[in-house]
Length: 291
Ligand SMILES: [Cu+2]
Image 1: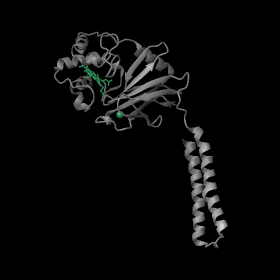
Image 2: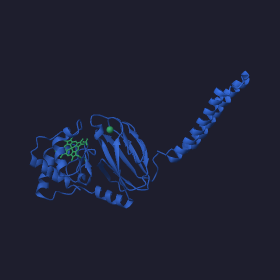
Image 3: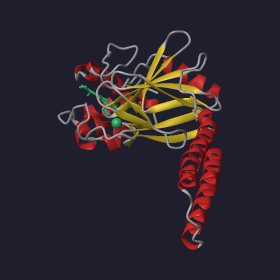
Image 4: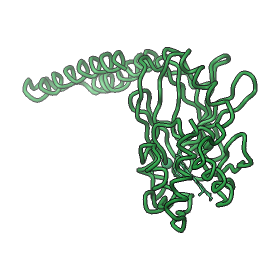
């Protein structure tokens, strides 16, 4: 980008200076009147040939700078699906297992990762300003973007295409880590959910099934196999919930379950305002322990 900026900026500055000089010359030095043949020659050369050559040279210089968006063999590919209003992130491991998570995109530092982007219903746009430009997520097709982060850290990402009521709450984080740390994280995510340990967590697990949460959420290793909401197998390991809206802890989990529609209007999870406080605390304790 820096090379592109300096070269195109310099070319633009040179052309601007020459044009201004010609303008001043024409205005103040009153050149003699040209014969018609010379005049039309001037127009053809100065008005067409020189600008066309300049543009062609600049295009030839800049075209190879465009990143290749084709998936490259051997590069890890992550599928990201834009949902209303959260991000479904899917990793296909080399042993055939599939790991799904939400609103966190874990990437290896210094390595190219191809993202395959799509959406089931409306157009979203994936944008991590610190890492790359925007790329639309369009129903019925798969767009690709390649990321090659240079430094470890957490980078904020947002949806950059107005997609509905809670569009502004559709955030996520790219977590750039060493390939070793990423492999450890993927290994942990691929495991089935921890069984509930304390009596409160056990009550939460039972409530999860009685209340019907499993119709929309998967918790691998249990009967919950719903697909329309985020996979909750390791929800306790995430930094934030609900598309970056809330930090992740027992209190915010309980609040989310009771009042998801007030916190994030129009999202696809109903508020469970009828649940008594005890039940909410038990559900939240169970989910928070799913590290
Ligand atoms: Cu969106």
